[in-house]
Image (cartoon, rainbow, N blue to C red; front, side, top):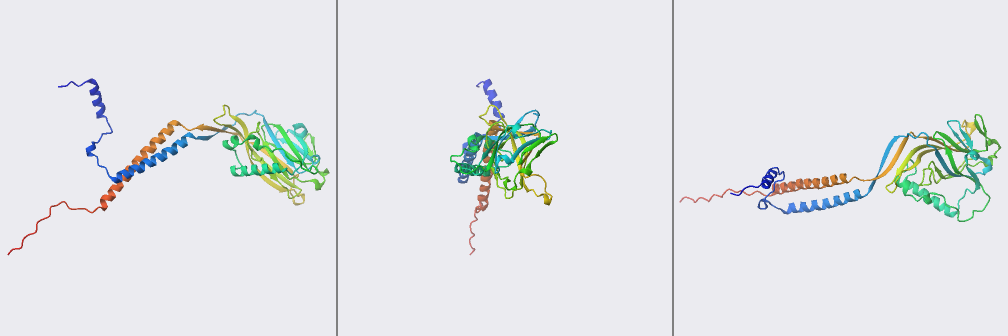
Length: 362
């Protein structure tokens, strides 16, 4: 008698634990319906695995929200606005809730004569930029793709390639304003401003009424330190149908950080959403205020982090196992259903032996 080795004993123990018993080839029964279902399952698994691989090789964007803890972070408001009035009739002022106020001379803004009409190449750029904003969405927080993939040069108004004839009929106000991280109001109104202990006053009464026209074009308005991507009001143009029109932009600034896979450090910015409102100032009808362009902004206490990440490899393997197991289980049930239907519709034949006919008695 042959002596059983230790390895054979171990193999016998593991054989008893086998949860996948094998069937002898002589006991297996194949059918054409089973082959068709197997081919269908193989094709389906191939398609699903291919789509899953394409999904895994891509990236996803995650949005994370938390309370803004940077109370002392300074901000800059960058703007480039053209108003259809001469610079001598305009005043630009900044007022925040802490009582700070200043005009364009103390804030570093530049007011230079310009033309409200654009050169042909500028009109072409503006039309393409507005169409791009319309297709991508021009309100609310910018997505990571929109904020980082747009060419920075394509979001800035190009210089005119041809000379615009005629006298300057507009004023271009541009520059960067250092602002505190509090709610504030930046406005452009008729008449220069005079500052006093309680704020400031505008000398609007010295401006001829026929010179008042607050049609304006916003080439750039951002709260970020770098000129990257397009922002909500960039490329916005308003043509006033009344000389005493007042345009108000209520802005909600959201501290935002964006980081793509190619970036080692996140880009810190301040995105914003805006609500526009237009009214016509008529003191005889009870509507107060001064005609002009007002940007009233406030900051949200929530910080948004937008991060581009790769998908998990472990989750990818789990999804592949789910695909294979699910398709095989479903194909098994489908094959069993087809087999039962074939058996139920197949005519049954009796297995009992037929009796011989009896002979007639004479």
